[in-house]
Amino acid sequence: MTRLENSDEILGWIEAEAGHGSAVVAVDAPLVICNPTGIRNAEREMNRHFRRFHAGCHAANLGRPFAQNVLSFSRRLGDLGFAHGAKMSVRERGRFQIEVHPHAATVNLFDLPRSVKYKRGPRALGQKNCAACAG
Image (cartoon, rainbow, N blue to C red; front, side, top):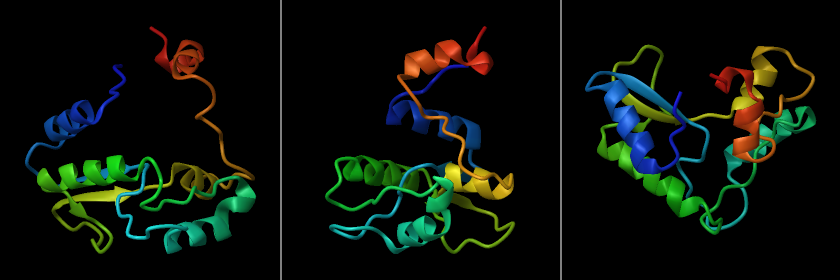
C-alpha cells in the first residue's frame, strides 16, 4: 500500500480509479467554506450531536490556514467533473464530491460511547506500529 501525500498524487489516483463513470469522492475535509470567520452551521450541528462522544469537528472558515488548500482541492475535483453532492439523491448517477466526518460516522454506525482516535502521533510511528501497514 502506498500513502499518497500531495494533491496531485491524490487527484491522479481518483481520476484513475473513477475513470469516466459515476463516482462519489468522500473527503475528510471541508469542501465548501463561505464564512470569513467563526464556525459553519453544519459544524455547529455536528458538535451539538457528537461533541459528547469526542467526535465533534473543528471550525472551518476562510481565515484558517488550511482553507485555501482544501478549496483548491475541491475546485480541482470540480475540474474532473465532481460536482458538490449536497443535493444528490440516492442512487443518482453522476460524479460527486462530499464532505465526510469519519469520527461521527463510526460513533453512530457502531454505537460507540466515544470516537476511536486513529490520528495520533507522527505518521511514520503510526505506520511502523500498524499491523495493517506491515509487510
